[in-house]
Each structure stands twice: as C-alpha cells, then as structure tokens.
Length: 269
Image (cartoon, rainbow, N blue to C red; front, side, top):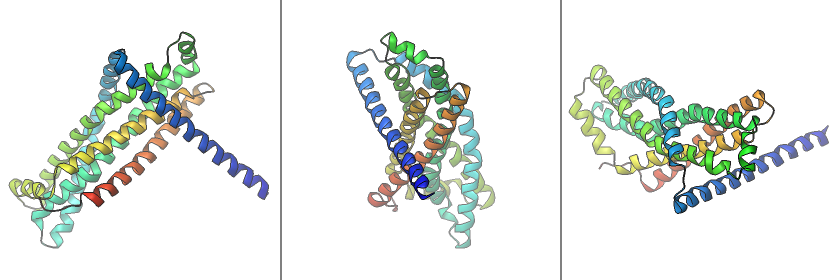
C-alpha cells in the first residue's frame, strides 16, 4: 500500500515538473516569436488586433458588472469601519487604496482568467483535436508564432483597459455610497483619496494586471495546444486553464503586493 502511494506521489511530482518544463519552453518560444516578428516586421498585427477586439468585447460588460457591486461593498465595509472611530474623512482614502491596490487588479485577473482563458483554451483545443495545428506545422507555419503570441499580446493590450474601467466604475460607485450613507462631501472624498494615493499604486496595479494577462496567455495557450481526446479533452483543457490561471494570478498579485508594501509603503502624499 505504501509503495503504491509513493508511486502515485512520484507520478504527480513528475507530471508537475514536466508541465513546468513545457511552460518554460513555451515561454521561450513565445518570446522568440515576438522578438523575431518585430525584427523581421512580420508579426501578425492583424491577428493581435482581432483577438484584442474579440476579447475586449466579451470582457467589457462583465468588467462593468463586477465593478458596480465591488465598489459598493468596499465603500460600505470600509466606511462602516472608519465611521466607528469617527474618521469619515478617510473614507475616500481607504476605499481608493482598497480598490486600486488590491480589488481592481484581482477583479481584472479573475475576469481575464475566467473569460479569456476559457475562450483561448477552447479555440486552441478545438484546433488541436481537429489536427489543424499539425497541418500548420506540416506547412511550415509555427502555431506558437501564429496563434499563441498574438493572443498573448492581445491580453497584454486589453488588461490595462479593463483595469482602468474597473477602477473608474468602482470609485464612482464608492463615491455615491459614501455620499448617501456617510454624509461626506465629494470634495472631501477625493481630497482624502489624493492625500494617500500616489503614482506607484497605479503602476503596481497595472503590473498586476499585466502579470495576470501573461499568465493567462501562457497557461491557456499550453493547455489548448496540448488538448487531446476529442470534446472531452477540450473541456478538460478549458477547466484546467481557468483554475491554474486564477491560482497563479492570486500568487503573482500577492508577490507584487509584498514588493509594493516593502518598497512603497502607504504614506500621506
């Protein structure tokens, strides 16, 4: 019994290391494809724009819908806390820092990891089981350069747009809740927000969103091109890409938050 458990554990470790290795190789191939395409001026810019428009179309409405309750919840929770200590003037600062530093990047990452990862993995997985990728390789076309790299660049392009949209809508909703529930003025809200926020907060928020975009592009691309076994294989690729993407997004966001806290601590501007 113990030998069977050890054998299964060894298989899990081996498969995990193999997946990490293939991910590293795919990352190398994507970087080489992008650099080579830029140098040779044959990067598939049309595909990048097409994918960016498609992904932005399917994520823009969910981004607004996520931002509305998110801004309201942050404002209510933070406002209730600062109201207990008689610091209503800090509602804007606390809401803004909560939204920009943590909430908006995580919401952007989860949105990209859920919607974009499933779309990319499903598209590439369907191409894989139809042997389109093998046909491309036979014709001398690199699937990484033609399919994965443009989708990764499209994700990098739309991630800041989604982040800014979520931040804007969430802050407006937080302001409306603060005005209605805690009786502070709009000027006091924005003044408090400006006193504690700085450019580093927005820079790190964009970095977190971009890291999430890169993670989704690589994970969904790898799972998609490795899909096997018909429709069931495509479904498995979609499920695994979504779960892995969101998990890695949380880890990367945590790491960047730690760096931000260490080198750019919160202070009155």
